[in-house]
Length: 316
Image (cartoon, rainbow, N blue to C red; front, side, top):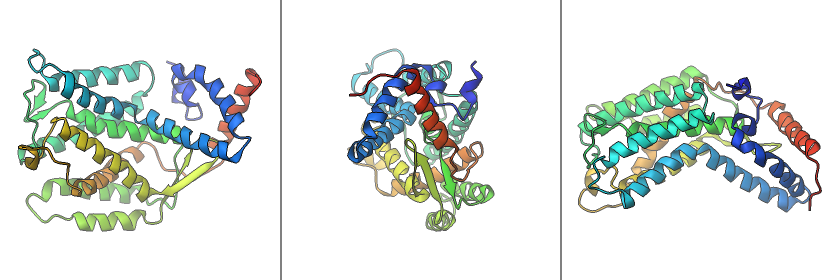
C-alpha cells in the first residue's frame, strides 16, 4: 500500500486515486474563480458542499439503502431486508478499505463506533425505547447487526471531515475533560431509565466546556471558522433528519409510530447533539486537536501551483 495514503500532508486526490484525474480541472476552475470576488465566493461555497458530500459518503449510502429497500426490496425474498442491509454495509465497508477511501486506522475508530452504538441499541430495544419490526437472522437480541453501521457512519463522517477540512481549534478544552463528559453522557443514556435524567445538566456542562471553542476548517486556501457547539448542532440536525428517514421507512419505530408514522419528536435532536459529544471524544482520541497554523494553507497553494504548472492550459 502506498505510504502516502497515511501522510496527512497528502491531498484527497493522493489518498484516493479515482479523484486524481479531476484535480487538474478543479485547479483550473479555482484559478478562473479567483479572478472575481463573487466567483470566488460561489466557488468556495460549492467546494464546501462537495467536501461535505465526500465526507458523508458512507452515511449517504446507508440512508440510500434504507430508502431503496423500503420501496423496492421484495418482502418474500429468502434473505430478510435487515440481513441484506447488514451484508450490503459489510460490502461497502470492504470496498472503501480496498479502494483506500478509508485507512485501517480510521476503520478501527469506526469499528469502535459500531460497538458503542450496538451496545446502546441492545439496551434501548430491551427496555422498549424503540423496536425493529422486521425479522432478521444477523442480530443480537432484538437488534439487527446492520444498525451498528448507522453509528459507524457518524464515525466515518467525522474522520473524513477532519481530513478533508484540516480541522484546527482554538481554546479547546483538555481531552480528559471531554472524555469525562462523554462518559457521563453515555452513562446517562442507560441510567436515566432507573435514576434521574441528567440531560439538562449535561447540556449545561457541554455548553460550559465548549463555550469558547472555535473550529477552523480549510475549504480552499484560507481558514474559515465557527463555534464548535454550532458545528455539533448542525451535524446533529442532519442525523436527526436521517433518523426521520429511518422511521419513515419503518427500519425502526418508536412506540408512538407503531400505528401511524409521525415525525420523530424534537427532543431526539437533543439526544443526537449529546451523542455528537460522545462521538467527538472517540475521534479526538486519535485525531488530536491542534491550533490553526499556516501549513495546510501552504500545502494547498503549493499543490494548486504544481498542478497548474505541470498541466498548463488556457483558462476561458
